[in-house]
Image (cartoon, rainbow, N blue to C red):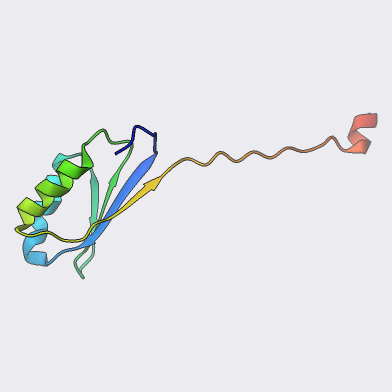
Amino acid sequence: MSAETHDLIRWTFQLEASRQHAVIELLRDYGAEVYTASDGHVQALWDETEQDLDAVAESLWQAAGSEFSITHEVFRRVETLEYHGVDDDRAAA
């Protein structure tokens, strides 16, 4: 992973219920907030993590007993500015 800063990382994947517990506990040990759905859908969120995410993925696959696909998304803060000119009526006052 690059040294570029980010504000949030989200991992999304599907996992059989029988393998979820070990993976979810491991994600929490790595500092992720974890959300699950009854269909096996899992989301893990990290705020500005310093984890080696390649190593985290390897450990998750080991805990699950097989590899599964993980969607990795990085969110960066967007700076939005608005500039307004001075209204002519207010400028005359």
